[in-house]
Length: 517
Image 1 (cartoon, rainbow, N blue to C red):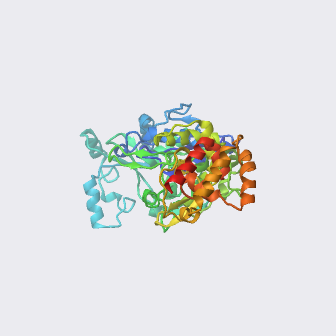
Image 2: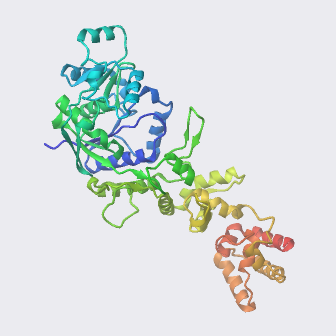
Image 3: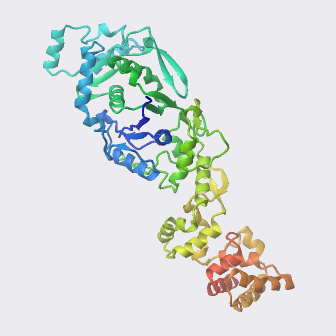
Protein backbone atom coordinates (compact mmCIF):
# COMPACT_ATOMS: atom_id res chain seq x y z
CA UNK A 1 0.00 0.00 0.00
CA UNK A 2 1.38 3.41 -0.99
CA UNK A 3 2.13 5.76 1.91
CA UNK A 4 0.08 8.89 2.39
CA UNK A 5 2.01 11.98 1.33
CA UNK A 6 3.17 13.89 4.40
CA UNK A 7 5.72 16.68 4.07
CA UNK A 8 7.04 19.23 6.52
CA UNK A 9 8.50 22.68 6.70
CA UNK A 10 10.73 23.06 9.73
CA UNK A 11 12.35 26.49 10.17
CA UNK A 12 14.63 27.50 13.02
CA UNK A 13 13.64 30.56 15.13
CA UNK A 14 17.04 32.17 14.64
CA UNK A 15 15.81 35.28 12.81
CA UNK A 16 13.46 36.31 10.01
CA UNK A 17 12.22 33.86 7.41
CA UNK A 18 14.38 34.15 4.27
CA UNK A 19 12.65 34.26 0.91
CA UNK A 20 14.42 31.00 -0.01
CA UNK A 21 12.67 29.36 2.94
CA UNK A 22 9.36 30.74 1.69
CA UNK A 23 9.93 29.04 -1.67
CA UNK A 24 10.76 25.75 0.08
CA UNK A 25 7.54 25.98 2.11
CA UNK A 26 5.58 26.78 -1.06
CA UNK A 27 6.93 23.75 -2.92
CA UNK A 28 6.07 21.53 0.04
CA UNK A 29 2.57 23.03 0.07
CA UNK A 30 2.05 22.50 -3.67
CA UNK A 31 3.29 18.91 -3.48
CA UNK A 32 1.12 18.06 -0.47
CA UNK A 33 -2.06 19.57 -1.91
CA UNK A 34 -1.53 17.96 -5.31
CA UNK A 35 -1.36 14.52 -3.70
CA UNK A 36 -4.08 15.04 -1.11
CA UNK A 37 -1.46 14.94 1.63
CA UNK A 38 -0.58 16.83 4.78
CA UNK A 39 1.79 19.74 5.36
CA UNK A 40 3.39 19.80 8.82
CA UNK A 41 4.75 22.94 10.49
CA UNK A 42 7.59 22.08 12.84
CA UNK A 43 9.92 24.42 14.74
CA UNK A 44 13.56 23.33 14.97
CA UNK A 45 14.83 25.11 18.08
CA UNK A 46 17.43 22.66 19.32
CA UNK A 47 20.26 25.19 18.93
CA UNK A 48 19.50 27.23 22.04
CA UNK A 49 22.50 29.53 21.49
CA UNK A 50 21.02 30.93 18.27
CA UNK A 51 17.44 31.45 19.45
CA UNK A 52 16.07 34.93 18.66
CA UNK A 53 13.02 36.22 20.59
CA UNK A 54 10.06 36.92 18.33
CA UNK A 55 11.36 34.86 15.40
CA UNK A 56 8.80 32.07 15.77
CA UNK A 57 5.91 34.54 15.91
CA UNK A 58 7.34 36.31 12.87
CA UNK A 59 7.43 33.04 10.90
CA UNK A 60 3.83 32.21 11.80
CA UNK A 61 2.61 35.69 10.83
CA UNK A 62 4.52 35.45 7.54
CA UNK A 63 2.67 32.32 6.48
CA UNK A 64 -0.67 33.82 7.45
CA UNK A 65 0.03 36.74 5.13
CA UNK A 66 1.38 34.52 2.36
CA UNK A 67 -1.69 32.28 2.45
CA UNK A 68 0.21 29.02 2.99
CA UNK A 69 -1.96 26.92 5.28
CA UNK A 70 -0.51 24.04 7.29
CA UNK A 71 -2.52 20.99 8.28
CA UNK A 72 -0.88 20.41 11.65
CA UNK A 73 2.00 21.66 13.73
CA UNK A 74 3.04 24.49 16.02
CA UNK A 75 0.06 26.76 16.85
CA UNK A 76 -2.25 24.24 15.14
CA UNK A 77 -1.89 20.99 17.06
CA UNK A 78 -2.24 17.50 15.65
CA UNK A 79 -1.79 13.82 16.43
CA UNK A 80 2.01 13.78 16.17
CA UNK A 81 2.98 16.57 18.57
CA UNK A 82 4.60 18.25 20.23
CA UNK A 83 5.86 20.01 17.11
CA UNK A 84 8.43 22.25 18.77
CA UNK A 85 11.68 20.29 19.12
CA UNK A 86 12.64 21.82 22.46
CA UNK A 87 9.51 20.14 23.86
CA UNK A 88 10.61 16.68 22.66
CA UNK A 89 13.75 16.22 24.81
CA UNK A 90 12.62 12.97 26.41
CA UNK A 91 11.78 11.49 23.00
CA UNK A 92 15.23 12.23 21.59
CA UNK A 93 17.01 10.95 24.69
CA UNK A 94 15.43 7.54 24.20
CA UNK A 95 16.74 7.29 20.62
CA UNK A 96 20.20 8.55 21.56
CA UNK A 97 20.39 5.73 24.11
CA UNK A 98 19.26 3.25 21.48
CA UNK A 99 22.21 4.19 19.25
CA UNK A 100 24.65 3.99 22.18
CA UNK A 101 23.34 0.56 23.21
CA UNK A 102 23.71 -0.74 19.66
CA UNK A 103 27.26 0.59 19.25
CA UNK A 104 26.17 3.00 16.55
CA UNK A 105 27.22 6.05 18.56
CA UNK A 106 29.67 6.92 21.33
CA UNK A 107 30.21 9.52 24.04
CA UNK A 108 32.98 12.11 23.56
CA UNK A 109 34.42 14.44 26.24
CA UNK A 110 36.74 16.53 24.07
CA UNK A 111 36.60 20.19 25.04
CA UNK A 112 36.42 22.99 22.45
CA UNK A 113 39.99 23.88 23.35
CA UNK A 114 41.19 20.34 22.72
CA UNK A 115 39.43 20.23 19.36
CA UNK A 116 40.92 23.59 18.38
CA UNK A 117 44.36 22.29 19.30
CA UNK A 118 43.88 19.30 16.98
CA UNK A 119 42.77 21.59 14.17
CA UNK A 120 45.82 23.79 14.63
CA UNK A 121 48.03 20.69 14.37
CA UNK A 122 46.22 19.52 11.24
CA UNK A 123 44.14 21.98 9.21
CA UNK A 124 42.35 19.03 7.59
CA UNK A 125 41.51 17.43 10.93
CA UNK A 126 38.27 15.49 10.96
CA UNK A 127 36.78 13.57 13.89
CA UNK A 128 36.36 10.18 12.21
CA UNK A 129 37.56 6.57 12.14
CA UNK A 130 41.16 7.64 11.55
CA UNK A 131 41.33 10.03 14.53
CA UNK A 132 38.66 9.00 17.05
CA UNK A 133 40.99 6.67 19.00
CA UNK A 134 43.35 9.61 19.63
CA UNK A 135 40.57 11.58 21.28
CA UNK A 136 38.83 11.42 24.67
CA UNK A 137 35.75 9.30 24.09
CA UNK A 138 34.07 6.08 25.16
CA UNK A 139 35.87 4.17 22.40
CA UNK A 140 39.34 5.14 23.65
CA UNK A 141 38.52 5.05 27.38
CA UNK A 142 37.34 2.36 29.77
CA UNK A 143 33.69 2.21 30.80
CA UNK A 144 34.71 3.08 34.38
CA UNK A 145 36.47 6.25 33.20
CA UNK A 146 33.44 7.24 31.17
CA UNK A 147 31.05 6.63 34.06
CA UNK A 148 33.27 8.59 36.45
CA UNK A 149 33.42 11.61 34.15
CA UNK A 150 29.65 11.62 33.66
CA UNK A 151 29.09 11.25 37.42
CA UNK A 152 31.44 14.18 38.04
CA UNK A 153 29.30 16.37 35.77
CA UNK A 154 31.67 16.66 32.84
CA UNK A 155 29.92 17.82 29.71
CA UNK A 156 29.92 15.53 26.71
CA UNK A 157 28.47 15.00 23.28
CA UNK A 158 27.24 11.88 21.54
CA UNK A 159 28.79 11.26 18.13
CA UNK A 160 27.53 9.02 15.36
CA UNK A 161 29.99 6.24 14.52
CA UNK A 162 30.58 6.13 10.77
CA UNK A 163 32.52 3.29 9.19
CA UNK A 164 34.72 4.39 6.25
CA UNK A 165 34.93 2.97 2.74
CA UNK A 166 31.26 2.63 1.86
CA UNK A 167 29.36 4.39 -0.93
CA UNK A 168 26.06 5.77 0.33
CA UNK A 169 23.47 6.44 -2.36
CA UNK A 170 20.83 9.14 -1.88
CA UNK A 171 17.86 8.73 -4.21
CA UNK A 172 16.82 12.27 -5.12
CA UNK A 173 13.68 13.05 -7.14
CA UNK A 174 15.28 16.11 -8.75
CA UNK A 175 18.94 15.10 -9.03
CA UNK A 176 18.74 11.36 -9.48
CA UNK A 177 21.09 9.11 -7.49
CA UNK A 178 23.79 10.97 -5.57
CA UNK A 179 26.62 8.81 -4.20
CA UNK A 180 29.00 9.87 -1.41
CA UNK A 181 31.70 7.73 0.20
CA UNK A 182 31.62 7.53 4.00
CA UNK A 183 35.37 8.16 4.15
CA UNK A 184 34.70 11.88 3.62
CA UNK A 185 32.14 12.05 6.43
CA UNK A 186 33.01 12.90 10.03
CA UNK A 187 31.44 11.46 13.17
CA UNK A 188 28.72 14.11 13.53
CA UNK A 189 27.56 15.27 16.95
CA UNK A 190 24.01 14.03 17.57
CA UNK A 191 23.43 15.13 21.15
CA UNK A 192 24.85 17.63 23.69
CA UNK A 193 24.68 17.12 27.45
CA UNK A 194 25.10 20.87 27.99
CA UNK A 195 21.46 21.54 27.14
CA UNK A 196 20.13 17.98 26.85
CA UNK A 197 19.16 18.66 23.26
CA UNK A 198 19.94 16.82 20.03
CA UNK A 199 21.51 18.45 17.00
CA UNK A 200 19.64 19.01 13.74
CA UNK A 201 20.75 15.66 12.32
CA UNK A 202 19.26 13.41 15.00
CA UNK A 203 16.16 15.49 15.72
CA UNK A 204 15.20 15.65 12.06
CA UNK A 205 15.47 11.91 11.52
CA UNK A 206 13.54 10.99 14.65
CA UNK A 207 10.82 13.57 13.98
CA UNK A 208 10.44 12.64 10.32
CA UNK A 209 10.11 8.98 11.27
CA UNK A 210 7.67 9.46 14.14
CA UNK A 211 5.60 11.99 12.19
CA UNK A 212 5.49 9.59 9.22
CA UNK A 213 6.99 12.08 6.77
CA UNK A 214 6.95 10.55 3.28
CA UNK A 215 8.98 13.17 1.37
CA UNK A 216 11.67 15.61 2.46
CA UNK A 217 11.69 18.63 0.14
CA UNK A 218 14.42 21.05 1.16
CA UNK A 219 17.16 23.33 -0.14
CA UNK A 220 20.23 22.16 -2.01
CA UNK A 221 22.41 23.27 0.90
CA UNK A 222 21.17 20.23 2.87
CA UNK A 223 22.26 17.73 0.22
CA UNK A 224 25.68 17.04 1.85
CA UNK A 225 23.95 15.96 5.07
CA UNK A 226 21.61 13.52 3.30
CA UNK A 227 24.04 10.55 3.27
CA UNK A 228 24.35 10.92 7.06
CA UNK A 229 20.57 10.87 7.33
CA UNK A 230 20.43 7.72 5.21
CA UNK A 231 22.95 6.09 7.57
CA UNK A 232 20.92 7.14 10.60
CA UNK A 233 17.76 5.59 9.15
CA UNK A 234 19.72 2.37 8.67
CA UNK A 235 21.18 2.53 12.18
CA UNK A 236 17.66 2.65 13.63
CA UNK A 237 16.44 -0.06 11.25
CA UNK A 238 13.95 2.33 9.59
CA UNK A 239 14.99 1.79 5.97
CA UNK A 240 11.43 0.89 4.93
CA UNK A 241 10.06 4.21 6.17
CA UNK A 242 12.84 6.42 4.84
CA UNK A 243 11.30 9.43 3.06
CA UNK A 244 12.09 10.27 -0.53
CA UNK A 245 14.40 13.26 -0.90
CA UNK A 246 14.17 16.26 -3.22
CA UNK A 247 16.82 18.96 -2.95
CA UNK A 248 15.75 22.25 -4.52
CA UNK A 249 18.08 24.50 -6.53
CA UNK A 250 19.66 27.47 -4.81
CA UNK A 251 18.34 30.99 -5.26
CA UNK A 252 21.20 32.92 -6.86
CA UNK A 253 22.16 36.59 -6.75
CA UNK A 254 20.46 38.81 -9.35
CA UNK A 255 23.93 39.91 -10.47
CA UNK A 256 27.21 38.05 -10.06
CA UNK A 257 27.94 34.65 -8.58
CA UNK A 258 26.81 33.01 -5.38
CA UNK A 259 23.57 32.50 -3.51
CA UNK A 260 21.08 35.25 -2.73
CA UNK A 261 21.81 37.22 0.45
CA UNK A 262 20.32 40.11 2.37
CA UNK A 263 23.20 42.26 1.16
CA UNK A 264 21.98 41.82 -2.44
CA UNK A 265 18.57 43.13 -1.47
CA UNK A 266 20.03 46.06 0.44
CA UNK A 267 22.22 47.00 -2.53
CA UNK A 268 19.58 46.70 -5.24
CA UNK A 269 16.56 47.81 -3.21
CA UNK A 270 14.40 44.70 -2.86
CA UNK A 271 13.43 42.70 0.25
CA UNK A 272 14.65 39.20 1.05
CA UNK A 273 12.14 38.68 3.89
CA UNK A 274 8.34 38.33 3.56
CA UNK A 275 7.61 40.83 6.35
CA UNK A 276 9.53 43.75 7.78
CA UNK A 277 11.92 42.49 10.46
CA UNK A 278 12.95 44.43 13.55
CA UNK A 279 16.08 42.81 14.95
CA UNK A 280 15.66 42.68 18.75
CA UNK A 281 19.42 42.53 19.29
CA UNK A 282 20.79 45.20 16.94
CA UNK A 283 17.66 47.28 16.48
CA UNK A 284 18.14 47.21 12.71
CA UNK A 285 15.04 47.15 10.52
CA UNK A 286 14.98 45.06 7.33
CA UNK A 287 12.36 45.64 4.64
CA UNK A 288 9.63 43.13 3.88
CA UNK A 289 7.56 42.28 0.82
CA UNK A 290 4.30 43.04 2.63
CA UNK A 291 5.39 46.52 3.68
CA UNK A 292 6.81 47.22 0.21
CA UNK A 293 3.32 46.75 -1.21
CA UNK A 294 3.63 43.32 -2.82
CA UNK A 295 0.53 41.16 -3.08
CA UNK A 296 1.07 37.74 -1.46
CA UNK A 297 -0.41 35.90 -4.44
CA UNK A 298 1.98 37.72 -6.79
CA UNK A 299 4.95 36.84 -4.59
CA UNK A 300 3.88 33.17 -4.49
CA UNK A 301 3.58 33.05 -8.28
CA UNK A 302 7.00 34.69 -8.72
CA UNK A 303 8.71 32.29 -6.29
CA UNK A 304 7.04 29.20 -7.76
CA UNK A 305 8.78 29.78 -11.09
CA UNK A 306 12.23 30.20 -9.55
CA UNK A 307 13.46 26.67 -10.13
CA UNK A 308 10.31 25.05 -11.52
CA UNK A 309 8.73 25.17 -14.96
CA UNK A 310 5.14 24.01 -15.51
CA UNK A 311 6.03 22.83 -19.01
CA UNK A 312 4.05 25.51 -20.87
CA UNK A 313 4.27 29.23 -21.56
CA UNK A 314 1.91 30.22 -18.77
CA UNK A 315 3.43 32.58 -16.21
CA UNK A 316 0.53 34.03 -14.22
CA UNK A 317 -1.07 31.23 -12.20
CA UNK A 318 -3.36 31.06 -9.21
CA UNK A 319 -2.37 28.89 -6.27
CA UNK A 320 -4.93 26.29 -7.38
CA UNK A 321 -3.43 26.23 -10.88
CA UNK A 322 0.05 25.81 -9.43
CA UNK A 323 -1.17 22.88 -7.32
CA UNK A 324 -2.58 21.23 -10.43
CA UNK A 325 0.54 21.74 -12.55
CA UNK A 326 3.30 21.25 -9.99
CA UNK A 327 5.78 18.45 -10.64
CA UNK A 328 8.93 17.98 -8.55
CA UNK A 329 10.65 16.17 -11.39
CA UNK A 330 10.41 19.39 -13.45
CA UNK A 331 12.42 21.35 -10.92
CA UNK A 332 15.81 22.47 -12.14
CA UNK A 333 19.08 21.10 -10.80
CA UNK A 334 20.84 24.39 -11.53
CA UNK A 335 20.43 27.43 -9.33
CA UNK A 336 17.68 29.94 -10.14
CA UNK A 337 18.71 33.58 -10.55
CA UNK A 338 16.59 35.87 -8.40
CA UNK A 339 15.20 38.28 -10.99
CA UNK A 340 13.62 40.81 -8.65
CA UNK A 341 12.53 42.94 -11.64
CA UNK A 342 10.37 40.00 -12.71
CA UNK A 343 8.90 39.98 -9.21
CA UNK A 344 7.82 43.59 -9.73
CA UNK A 345 6.28 42.58 -13.06
CA UNK A 346 4.25 39.87 -11.35
CA UNK A 347 2.96 42.37 -8.82
CA UNK A 348 1.88 44.65 -11.68
CA UNK A 349 -0.02 41.78 -13.31
CA UNK A 350 -1.87 40.86 -10.12
CA UNK A 351 -2.58 44.48 -9.21
CA UNK A 352 -4.24 45.08 -12.60
CA UNK A 353 -6.51 42.11 -11.98
CA UNK A 354 -7.93 43.79 -8.89
CA UNK A 355 -10.97 46.05 -9.01
CA UNK A 356 -9.98 49.70 -8.41
CA UNK A 357 -11.99 49.63 -5.17
CA UNK A 358 -9.60 46.94 -3.89
CA UNK A 359 -6.73 49.42 -4.23
CA UNK A 360 -8.41 52.04 -2.07
CA UNK A 361 -7.64 50.87 1.50
CA UNK A 362 -3.90 51.23 0.90
CA UNK A 363 -4.32 54.29 -1.31
CA UNK A 364 -6.53 55.97 1.30
CA UNK A 365 -3.85 55.39 3.96
CA UNK A 366 -1.29 57.10 1.71
CA UNK A 367 -3.62 60.04 1.12
CA UNK A 368 -4.32 60.46 4.82
CA UNK A 369 -0.60 60.37 5.56
CA UNK A 370 -0.35 63.36 3.21
CA UNK A 371 -3.20 65.21 4.90
CA UNK A 372 -5.89 64.39 2.32
CA UNK A 373 -9.31 62.95 3.07
CA UNK A 374 -11.37 61.44 0.30
CA UNK A 375 -13.87 58.63 -0.30
CA UNK A 376 -13.29 55.12 -1.64
CA UNK A 377 -15.47 55.92 -4.64
CA UNK A 378 -13.41 58.96 -5.69
CA UNK A 379 -10.15 57.13 -4.95
CA UNK A 380 -11.30 54.23 -7.13
CA UNK A 381 -11.95 56.67 -9.99
CA UNK A 382 -8.38 57.95 -9.70
CA UNK A 383 -7.07 54.37 -9.73
CA UNK A 384 -9.13 53.62 -12.82
CA UNK A 385 -7.65 56.61 -14.66
CA UNK A 386 -4.03 56.14 -13.59
CA UNK A 387 -3.26 52.47 -13.06
CA UNK A 388 -1.98 51.95 -16.61
CA UNK A 389 0.48 54.86 -16.42
CA UNK A 390 4.25 54.47 -16.51
CA UNK A 391 6.55 55.78 -13.79
CA UNK A 392 10.22 56.67 -13.76
CA UNK A 393 12.52 55.17 -11.13
CA UNK A 394 16.18 54.77 -10.30
CA UNK A 395 17.58 51.23 -10.18
CA UNK A 396 20.24 49.86 -7.84
CA UNK A 397 22.99 51.12 -10.15
CA UNK A 398 21.56 54.66 -10.12
CA UNK A 399 20.25 54.36 -13.68
CA UNK A 400 17.02 56.16 -14.67
CA UNK A 401 14.43 53.66 -15.92
CA UNK A 402 10.70 53.37 -16.56
CA UNK A 403 8.15 50.73 -15.59
CA UNK A 404 4.44 50.20 -15.20
CA UNK A 405 2.66 51.04 -11.96
CA UNK A 406 3.31 47.92 -9.90
CA UNK A 407 2.46 49.07 -6.36
CA UNK A 408 -0.34 51.17 -4.93
CA UNK A 409 2.36 53.46 -3.51
CA UNK A 410 3.40 54.27 -7.10
CA UNK A 411 0.18 56.23 -7.50
CA UNK A 412 0.84 59.11 -5.12
CA UNK A 413 3.63 60.90 -7.04
CA UNK A 414 1.42 60.72 -10.15
CA UNK A 415 -1.90 61.61 -8.51
CA UNK A 416 -1.38 64.48 -6.13
CA UNK A 417 -3.03 66.94 -8.53
CA UNK A 418 -6.34 65.05 -8.27
CA UNK A 419 -6.62 66.24 -4.69
CA UNK A 420 -4.36 69.30 -4.48
CA UNK A 421 -4.47 72.16 -7.00
CA UNK A 422 -1.11 73.36 -8.32
CA UNK A 423 -0.15 76.71 -6.82
CA UNK A 424 3.20 77.15 -8.52
CA UNK A 425 4.24 76.41 -12.08
CA UNK A 426 7.76 75.56 -13.12
CA UNK A 427 8.37 77.77 -16.16
CA UNK A 428 11.55 75.79 -16.84
CA UNK A 429 9.52 72.59 -17.14
CA UNK A 430 9.82 71.45 -20.74
CA UNK A 431 6.10 70.70 -21.06
CA UNK A 432 5.05 74.02 -19.50
CA UNK A 433 7.48 76.04 -21.60
CA UNK A 434 6.32 74.35 -24.80
CA UNK A 435 2.60 74.65 -24.18
CA UNK A 436 2.12 78.00 -22.50
CA UNK A 437 2.91 81.02 -24.63
CA UNK A 438 1.78 84.65 -25.02
CA UNK A 439 -1.55 83.70 -26.64
CA UNK A 440 -2.36 80.91 -24.19
CA UNK A 441 -4.15 83.00 -21.52
CA UNK A 442 -6.70 84.24 -24.06
CA UNK A 443 -7.33 80.67 -25.27
CA UNK A 444 -7.76 79.52 -21.68
CA UNK A 445 -10.27 82.32 -20.98
CA UNK A 446 -12.31 81.16 -23.96
CA UNK A 447 -12.08 77.58 -22.72
CA UNK A 448 -13.24 78.59 -19.24
CA UNK A 449 -16.21 80.47 -20.72
CA UNK A 450 -17.33 77.45 -22.69
CA UNK A 451 -16.86 75.10 -19.75
CA UNK A 452 -18.90 77.48 -17.58
CA UNK A 453 -21.81 77.03 -19.97
CA UNK A 454 -21.69 73.20 -19.90
CA UNK A 455 -24.63 71.93 -17.84
CA UNK A 456 -23.78 68.21 -18.21
CA UNK A 457 -20.21 68.34 -16.84
CA UNK A 458 -19.37 64.81 -17.87
CA UNK A 459 -16.83 63.58 -20.41
CA UNK A 460 -19.48 63.42 -23.14
CA UNK A 461 -21.05 66.74 -22.12
CA UNK A 462 -17.71 68.58 -22.25
CA UNK A 463 -16.69 66.96 -25.54
CA UNK A 464 -19.93 68.08 -27.14
CA UNK A 465 -19.10 71.68 -26.18
CA UNK A 466 -15.31 71.84 -26.63
CA UNK A 467 -14.50 69.65 -29.63
CA UNK A 468 -16.62 71.63 -32.17
CA UNK A 469 -15.23 74.93 -30.83
CA UNK A 470 -11.65 73.66 -31.17
CA UNK A 471 -12.37 72.37 -34.68
CA UNK A 472 -14.01 75.62 -35.74
CA UNK A 473 -11.29 77.94 -34.36
CA UNK A 474 -8.29 75.71 -35.00
CA UNK A 475 -7.32 76.04 -31.34
CA UNK A 476 -5.71 73.15 -29.53
CA UNK A 477 -6.38 73.81 -25.82
CA UNK A 478 -5.66 70.39 -24.33
CA UNK A 479 -1.98 70.69 -23.39
CA UNK A 480 -2.37 74.17 -21.90
CA UNK A 481 -5.48 72.90 -20.14
CA UNK A 482 -3.30 70.19 -18.64
CA UNK A 483 -0.74 72.73 -17.46
CA UNK A 484 -3.54 74.64 -15.71
CA UNK A 485 -5.07 71.64 -13.98
CA UNK A 486 -1.95 69.56 -13.30
CA UNK A 487 1.00 71.93 -13.39
CA UNK A 488 3.02 69.71 -15.72
CA UNK A 489 2.65 67.16 -18.51
CA UNK A 490 1.18 64.20 -16.66
CA UNK A 491 -2.27 62.90 -15.87
CA UNK A 492 -5.20 61.26 -17.65
CA UNK A 493 -7.42 62.47 -20.48
CA UNK A 494 -8.40 66.09 -19.80
CA UNK A 495 -12.11 65.45 -20.09
CA UNK A 496 -11.85 62.63 -17.54
CA UNK A 497 -9.79 64.77 -15.17
CA UNK A 498 -12.14 67.76 -15.43
CA UNK A 499 -15.19 65.55 -14.88
CA UNK A 500 -13.53 64.20 -11.73
CA UNK A 501 -12.63 67.68 -10.42
CA UNK A 502 -16.01 69.19 -11.25
CA UNK A 503 -16.87 72.47 -12.97
CA UNK A 504 -15.99 74.88 -10.16
CA UNK A 505 -12.58 73.37 -9.39
CA UNK A 506 -11.70 73.04 -13.06
CA UNK A 507 -12.48 76.67 -13.86
CA UNK A 508 -10.79 77.84 -10.65
CA UNK A 509 -7.56 76.09 -11.64
CA UNK A 510 -7.69 77.54 -15.16
CA UNK A 511 -8.11 81.06 -13.76
CA UNK A 512 -5.25 80.55 -11.28
CA UNK A 513 -2.94 79.47 -14.09
CA UNK A 514 -3.91 82.50 -16.19
CA UNK A 515 -3.12 84.80 -13.26
CA UNK A 516 0.18 83.21 -12.28
CA UNK A 517 1.60 82.22 -15.63
